[in-house]
Length: 348
Ligand code: KG4
Ligand code: ZN
Image (cartoon, rainbow, N blue to C red; front, side, top):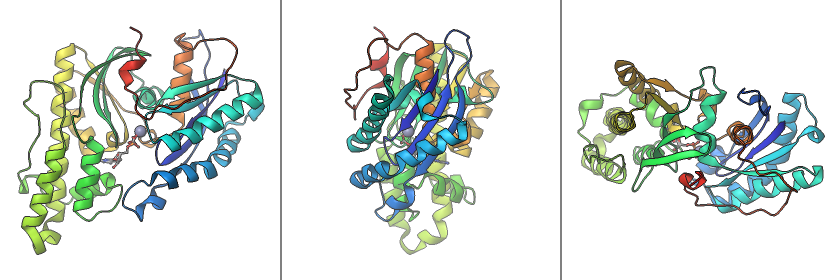
């Protein structure tokens, strides 16, 4: 079945096509995908401006659909299912993707499927050359979420722990802002950190020994703020060291809690997904720690770590193959879910 997937939950418009055969046991195959990042547009404001995001999604989504179809060598009339991100995310941005998806589906007389953004992220390693097997522990680390999940199959998600305040990506972005690195600061902070000494500053590792699998990053941001104030005019010379210390604190907490989740569940596979999963230090430390314990780690391909349409089309295809898509007369009524816990997707 040819599936069109549309992602528009935040500041990336992504459109992709996958082919998903039902019953042959193969993972859906990515045929083409196109992406536009709005980062440059939002940079002037130091963060995502929701109204500008919605308007830009409107401008981009159809040209990107054409580009994805062209890359896949298919025509729009061949699409058999139209998937879109239903949530979580910015309400207005989600509505653009949902509205366009339903309009295309109605014109074609084909069904639609609203996909959970985080399900897209956590299944995205299935598009890599080294896909995981179920069950596994998933570490979801993005700009809006930090969660550890137990994943027993498509649609079978159990929340093990999550952040009680800022997400890991937010910790990167807010600290980067304090260091004068612009938005989104995660990649810039991690580049700068390569030139610094991570032990030059002592920063807190919040909830490291809490005994549960929850995270907290708000205190870390405050500690970085305190250091920048203390340094004053000296900050410029110490910026790389402070970036390295910040990254080390975030990475240590993510690695230790992931290992604790593996111990608690007794599982021997870890999937890392979401934008922060692109972080090189995190990958290096997780790889080393997991190798010592005989745990396999799986990542999405680097370009599919951050938001994209491929993961939405893929999640739709995998849901279809798992028999989780209800058949029947297509309906073009839609709603979006700006707040939507992933565990709600699991069958009781
Ligand atoms: O998954 P994503 O594209 O969007 C959300 O759903 O939030 O994640 C974006 C987040 C941003 O906070 C960004 O700073 C962070 O991922 N990020 C990184 C890196 N690349 C992206 N953080 C640290 N190191 C990176 N290399
Ligand atoms: Zn995301």
